[in-house]
Image 1 (cartoon, rainbow, N blue to C red):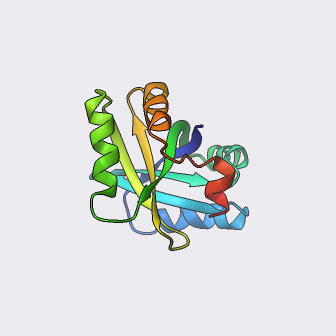
Image 2 (image 1 turned 120 degrees about the horizontal axis):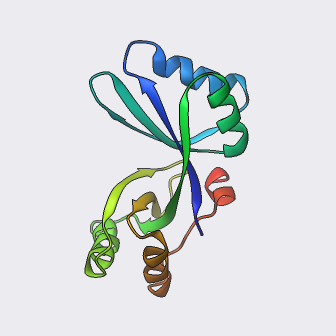
Image 3 (image 1 turned 90 degrees about the vertical axis):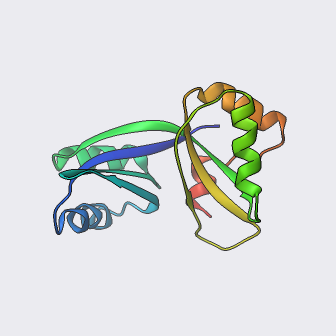
Length: 143
């Protein structure tokens, strides 16, 4: 069960992130999760939005570079070592993690983690075999 993530290149200067998030807000796009990796001149905003198809159209129309990426969204026990157990499982099966980020909308007993991995199908199969709980696009947006 994959989740669609948007990745957007944003100029790394004062006000640009505010402009981008205002664009989403003014168009009724709920930014559910967010991660930003920056360089000197640009940043890459990665996030999950409630309506990714509409978001892509709006973002492209505004002149931004955007792409959709399949990621895995899972719940991980929110306790010391909870994430390490999942990471070890992927490592033992030689699955490289390109990046990950967490998000929380409602505090509970689990942390919510978004993974981008080199072999998404293999990762999903292995995690499923170990009873890791996956979240759908809809479930993430309703957390």
